[in-house]
Every structure is written in C-alpha cells, then in structure tokens.
Image 1 (cartoon, one colour):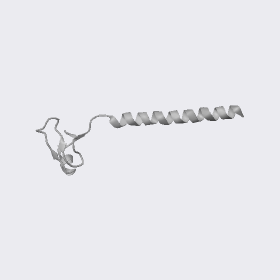
Image 2: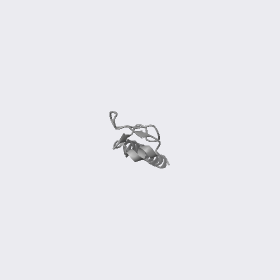
Image 3: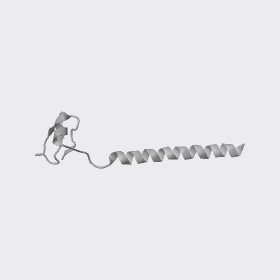
Image 4: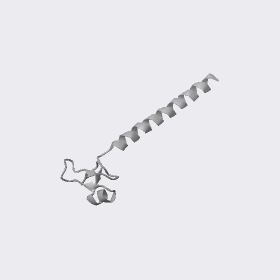
Amino acid sequence: MPIRRILAAVIATAALAGLGLTGVATAATAQGAPSYVTPSQCREGGGEPRIDLPGNPCVGGSYDGQKVD
C-alpha cells in the first residue's frame, strides 16, 4: 500500500510540473515580437495612422498604440 501512495504522489507532482511548464511556455510565446499593422488596418479598426509621431503609432481604435508599418 505505501508504494501506491508514493507512486500516486510522484504522478501528481509530475502532472503539476508539466502544467507549470506549459504555462511558462505560453507566457513566453505571448510576448513574442512586436505587432505591426498596415495603415489600412489601422483605419479599418477605427484608428488613425500617425506616422509623423515617434514610433509611428496607430492612434485610437482597436489597434491603438501598435506600430504602423
């Protein structure tokens, strides 16, 4: 019986560790490369491409703050 309890504890620990590693991988992927939108995408999203401002942001709309390329 003690062997079954130890085995169950080892399996549970391994499962939780696997979930933790998956969460870390997801967080690293979500940060990824910076997002760029085209001027037309910016306008379609309700914003205005402001290439005259530093960083060329899309101002307003659903793409607010993203770089226009």
